[in-house]
Every structure is written in structure tokens, then in C-alpha cells.
Image (cartoon, rainbow, N blue to C red; front, side, top):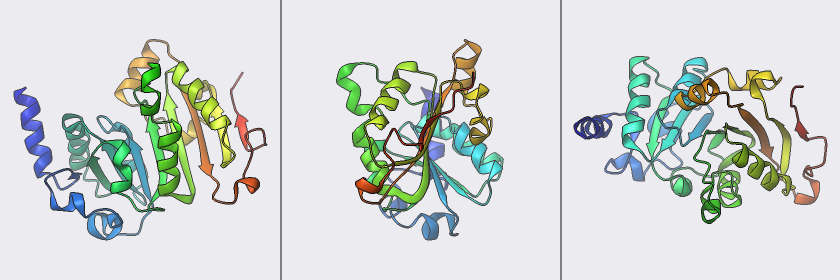
Length: 239
């Protein structure tokens, strides 16, 4: 408990953590470029970022982009914010909030890329609406993404991946959809840059296969969007 309280104290003082109690927390919506990053680089957001390995790993590889990790757990964010400080990465921020309230912190079109990495699968039926790939969350993402931005999803959980494929298969507003049930044997592997979170390393060590998909939203009339059975809805499983 003492360590956790100390971590809470540290993140409360960190400039790269935006959380309740800080003035910028209520003012950052629509102002990530001018109030925090002070540049016009495109913004990538990682949801349920946990310890922030993916956010920090991507930021180190792509200094020409900005990266924001979102999580509600302050002790987890402490780890990612510490790594960003140690690596002197000015293109990293962490936002401490519930993901369902994402629209309170981003204007429409402010997010250029979205990563959903190993979220809680929420296997109980009563928790379906809380899955980060459920329709209500997809509606939030669509409202905040740029027209050409990719949504990228990684998981080890077969049930969550199948659920996500089924839900996305019912949409008519997806472009450039591709997926694989075995990322590390797939031509899609380079898109994930071989960055592994603590959970991914643990799951792969246990023999779990990593699943991945990505797509863009179409913002044209739904009649003109790619239907799920069009060439844009592809599975690139390696065999």
C-alpha cells in the first residue's frame, strides 16, 4: 500500500500525467496540440494502456507522432510515465480516466490512430456493453477519429476476438479491414512493430496465439461504405 500511495503522489506531480485535480484535466479537450505537445504531430491513443509499454515503445520508434496512453489505474500509469521520463520522450502523455468518458477529452477528429491492446475480455454476458470493442465504444471511437485513422486491436482472448469479428462484420462503415488469428505468422506482423506488453509476453510464453485486426471507419453515406463481405474485409491468417 505504501508503494502504491507513493506512486499516486509521483503521478500527481508528473507533467506527463493528466488526471483529476490538475487544471489541464478539464481543459485539454481540443487542445492536445497547443496545451500539451506544442506541435501539430498526429495523435495516437492507446486504450487500457496498463503499464504503458506499448505507448512508450511506439513513441520511441516514432518521434514524429504524439502518443497518449489512457487508463484509470494511477499505479499502472506511474510505470509508463516513469519510462517516458527516463527515455526523455516529449511525445508521450498519459490520461487517467474511464474510457467511456473519452469524448470529454478529445474533439471529433483529434485522434489519428487508436490502439486497443489486450483489454479485459469481460466474458460475462452482463458485461458485454463494457467490452472495448462493443458497439457503444465503437460509436465513441468513430466520433473522435480522423477520416483516415486506423483502429488497431490486439488480444490473446479467442472469445473476445470472435465477438469483435462478429460485431464488426455487421457494420457497413469499415474500410481496409484485415485480421489474423496468428499475428506472429502473419504478414500483418510488421504493423505491430514487435512491441510486447507484459501481458503479451506472459500469454505467448503460455502458448497463447495473438490475434490482431485493424480497420478505418468510412465517413461517407453507409450506402457507399465497404460492406463486410467486400474485398476490404479480409482475413490474412497465415497457413
